[in-house]
Length: 254
Picture 1 (spheres, one colour):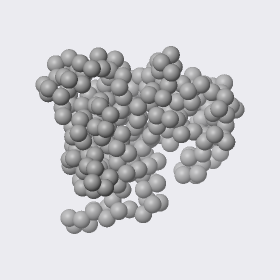
Picture 2 (cartoon, rainbow, N blue to C red):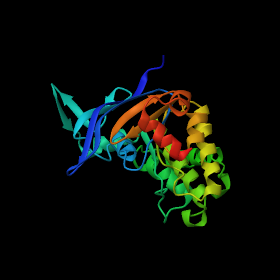
Picture 3 (cartoon, rainbow, N blue to C red):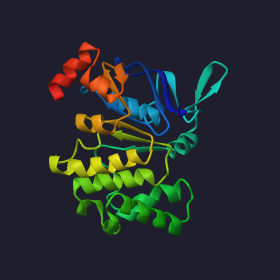
Picture 4 (cartoon, helix red, strand yellow):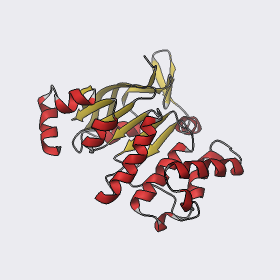
């Protein structure tokens, strides 16, 4: 049994009076693909954002590869880390947003080398060579000198995936990576993610693509109302869900 890469324990998150996460527990093992499903407002995206400390948790804790994220423990108390320490931790956590988040004033290659050069102090020449390999991997070897505005949505998202990989992260988080795309562009992005899954990349993917979940996920997690309602292998959760709420959701999306 492979070791646990991501551990989420008793995580609560509120925005004012609105409780978005209400005691979430989750384990993701090294090399595993976990797909998180659920209706809008169920807490899926907030969960991802707490994993890389874009959102601070109110209660509970998260660790990646055995290291607490965003906090240090002293006795029974947690103390928030300094921003520079959080930024160091984020270099181990790739995040692919639904709206690409590329720097519009930088070329594709410059987008890919920005973090390795600035955060990891990699030599520019080495970072450019790595960027070229990553662009070839996502089928965009000829776009290194292009600007984001010159690319389709699907191409921009593939660049965003390559950029996340440029830091050689321990885990990749995808927040509805195809939701901003025209339907005919969805396949090219999912194909890249499927390829990553085959190479043993540890991933947590928030998506509404049930077919993708069935084909690629090792584990499917269904969330509703800020809690994990049920989880298990795709065949169990998607074909024989135990919980009425899961059945109701799947009946609407399938």
